Length: 195
Image (cartoon, rainbow, N blue to C red; front, side, top):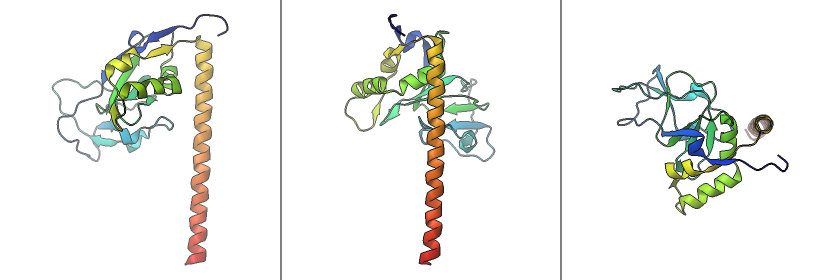
């Protein structure tokens, strides 16, 4: 960005923020249910969501739920780490639990995927840790998330960062697949030798 001034703004000036869907009572896992439910255990900051592996259920509500949409960002509200997950190719009728904030970027100067990447970087992660206190399982408040300052570089830089992040994710997945394959080979060798 050279000598140009850095543009930073609170997230609340760039996006809307809402809490995930509040289910009444326990969620029943129903084979063939028409509604998919994202839970903490089905998300990660470093791997894509397995949409087919989500819990399936039915929802009875007076009003139509606010379904998750492409280009939204989930930010973990509860737990040891508040990471962000960018949503792409969201199946119809998908909800998330209130353990997440749902962020919808409304400013055309910044890409939603870049916001998600930025939230997962050390400066914002350190900011979250300071604001959450020392509890092992803390809560990220909506006020802290809304006031988090987001940097807006030129669109070209945002695109390059996203491309690099996707390449790093593919490399991580390839390495994990190789490690998993090697572990399976070693188990097969052990069975053959030790049986």
